[in-house]
Length: 205
Image (cartoon, rainbow, N blue to C red; front, side, top):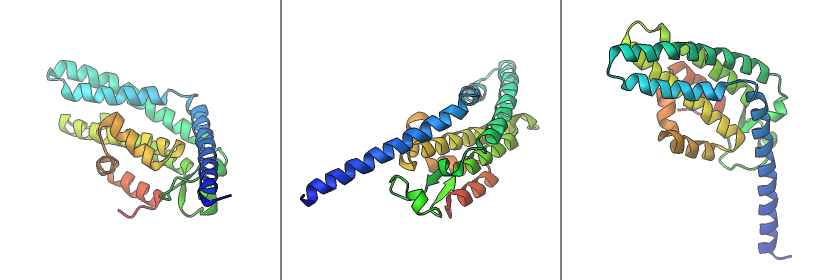
């Protein structure tokens, strides 16, 4: 068997193993998320913020904010429940590799070069519950908090895509869906979230 043939076989083997791993992660996360309305609430909240921030009429804007208040509370509650539920998943199924190459099972060979998705979900649940847009004292602060909350939600989506696929795909999806880069999102989240997230994924800055 020549080197070229062997390389093709190895490549196909790695591809199949990685695809199987990604499928397991995706199905597992979908199984737990399916018990909640988190994705629907997140989408409604981000769209609602854009509508409120773009509304020129004060009365209509206030009506939108009032509707969003209950959505935000529901999302925070469901995320807390999801985080508690997800924390019971076996650790071997929640490892996420931080290595540059998205190769299968490398997180088990090099456990220090990865993070636990259970910790990531707990981090996001805490962060989103902390922003509390509707505790704002005035419209300016409300707008600032809505901007931060949007970034927090995008970062959680980023983590989920990273877990299900890879960091590279998560970055591409972030740009494709929101026209926003990872660097922009991480700069816009709360400072505590940024510190905790960097610590979790082993990023220095």
